[in-house]
Image (tube, protein in one colour):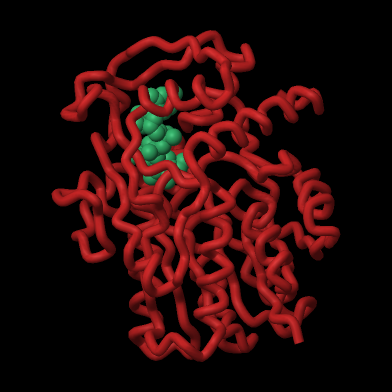
Length: 344
Ligand code: UD1
């Protein structure tokens, strides 16, 4: 029988791409999402790509009774992938309680209700933000956790600890924590992609909106960092590659192979790319110019971080495959599709 996976935040950016890959791999998916930062039309995109419209439950996971009813209505959930969370770094500084409540209470409710509902494991969406500015690059999973620079980052650290403590106390399930570097791009079909709400805070949606003329110019936050061209360096990973890693993680967690009850993996390409390199890469991949100017540094930015993905490569047998060029082209194709649809 097909294994059933509950994907929280499955209408969101990484969530929707993961639902597609899970369904393509033969998993049965149930999506729960409160649509606070997404629109239900994403379900149409998922259906167009996979031919399957997964059941969707609109629910705020802070509602514990609601979560209980969800497990009853969709009995037999084998595993959870928990994406649902608030993720705007700046907003988290302004509204810390919203972030602590949304990102922590939701996890607590899931962990509380997993044993009585027979759920065997949870994959948790964490972030390379837990490493802060690493002392050694590329960064491995053993690198020390640095004090968080925002309430958002802190919720990722706290949630990792909550999972660790819960398993240490003998909870009857497993967990895999995935630390994402910078996911970008869209599904090659351009049926799903990133849908930022309002003015984008992240680099790629701002860049593609500038390239298409919605924004006048892209601000490059600083060119005086200690990097070859002075702009910050990140590890940009294709969102479909990232989604595929979740399928492998679920296979492993729910299969009998893994002995450990908690495992942590970096999900990145292993390549550091600067903001200026990314802009030029986009222009090369698409032939479209990106008006940009150098401005001051953004508060709280890390100078440089990229992954050592060897642990995921070896243990999960997963490697990021898509080239940066194809990934940037997919982000552009998605932006063009949004214009076609009259969305942005
Ligand atoms: C940020 C968070 C990260 C979080 C992610 C999710 C920090 C330190 N990191 O990642 O924890 O998981 O968002 O949203 O807050 N840039 C520009 N101009 C722009 C936008 C960005 O130059 O208009 C630069 C930034 O300075 C940075 C790079 O582009 O060097 C990537 O920025 P962004 O896409 O916002 O991601 P992170 O800051 O790496």
